[in-house]
Image (cartoon, rainbow, N blue to C red; front, side, top):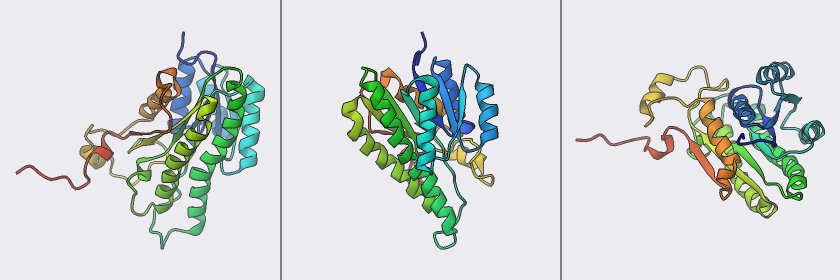
Length: 256
């Protein structure tokens, strides 16, 4: 018996990176999965690659009407919604607060923060129908260590991810009595398509306690745990999956 047999999941950003890896692990556990993404052609190819009846749903998470329609599509296709992972996100350029274009800031806040809040809204509405029937439901939001330890030249991204962490806590308190758990994960340096191309991966890996970059599968495994019954008493947390990044002092002392 699989970990997620008989459960229905929706994964935003599911056509690539962390979202795709998460969809794959949920399918391996027996779930029926719908992947949501803004790239229609990528959705189609990714859903085909995942197989097992996976459906693709085009969604712009920054548009509440689009999110509402996407959740309805999942309910119509599978009969409900039990699990959700909100992994859609953008970096939106790197630059100082003075130099970054206002449009880039607006987009990052709309997608990375507004998108998570809109998704939770309609996911929780759908999940309440399931929990009214005696089921348990769970949501995982993908934040970032940048929301805990902000990065210079990424004010918009850091602020949005910090907002995701706090919105997760609020949601957990609001829907906990309805048997819906809400948690978030803060990935550290993880090899995904949105990782800046000019990042010195070898150097960064050398200063992490684990001495390696994270993978999308690392994040997916953590998401699967938080979605599973093994985490039934865990809600409202932010789980760093960062190779020890936040555990270390960025200016460590050297032994004498």
